[in-house]
Amino acid sequence: MREIISYYAVTSAEFWVGITLIVLALAVLLLAVRPESEYADLPRGEFPSPGESHPTRHVSGGDPPVRVLPPNMRPQDGALIMREAPRDEIAISALLDLASRGFIELVEYRYLPKATPSIIIVFLRGPDETCNTEERTFLDLISVPGRAENPPYAKSHPFDERRFRATLEDLGFPPVGVPVARLSGTRRSVGEKLVGTVTKRVSSDYHWLRSGRESLASAGILELLGGFAATILTIILMLAGSLRPFWVIVSVLLMVIGAATILGASVRTTDGSVARDQARGFRRYLIETPLDASISEIAGYGAWAVALDCIDGWVQSLERLSVVQQVDVAESVPSLIRTSEPLTSWNQVGEFLSLLLNRLHADPESDDTKSPSVYVSWQDIRVE
Image (cartoon, rainbow, N blue to C red; front, side, top):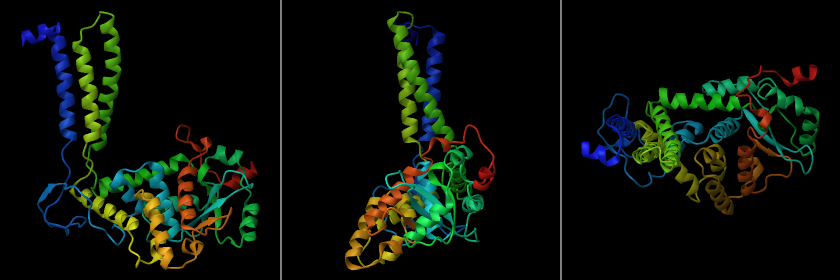
């Protein structure tokens, strides 16, 4: 050991501090990279009956079988368990699911012909027994027009409800609901709370995600960033002649181990692997839809197309089905309304979904995460 310490030209204390840092980083890596498992004696995508015990094995490769029916979960749950989707995609999939079930409408609305389109959330009815926690909370929030928007945005972008209604009536879309919010000005905290509720349900209630995964990932990020900063600093000090190369080696190893921890960390429990296979199997169905499927039924899966990141594949399936099944596109997606031009093709529906993703929290004034403000309605702002 003395020869090794002597080779690196460091003191014994320095050497053991460096070794301790590397050992701790390796311990975190070993905790993080436990392989995910699946049930060995059940078909992929099938949950065991309550109380049953089944042997497990490492997750097998390849695609799960095609699943014709939607998974036993909400689209936003599928977005999280299949691919840990970004927050905005989870939120939009939840909104589209509410729209497909008749709670809200989503209206593309332009104030001026060449203006950037807004997406207006139109409230149709309140929550019922089919709604889960985040859906009920969101519907209660938007039941008062303007309350879901951040007040600075609502004040600088006053909404003209009469003009909105007149525009829809001129286009032959008499509004049956109440316009309540614009996606671009919707509070960021609303989306964060929605995603937080989904994450809690998937992690704590369903036990589909490994406990402690976030702490391990955070430790990996700390190692990566700390190792990178230390590498830069130690190289500078080594070139200046005030530090030995030993610390450059330690810093680089910490950075590499941190990256491996982030990339290799297992996420799902055994039940989580089943849920992921259900979502992946249904994604295959949306992309590989057979020609004898009902186009009206497939058209109702827009929320799943966003959740499972297959908008383009879903649209292509609808285009194939439209060759043999003639349907009115706009009537097939009644909760999506476009004022710039009628929805006449499935490509336009795909563009509509992409627009939803682009417009959510698009305005900087929607950000209330650093300075939360009270909930106020459009009427309260007008009175001011």
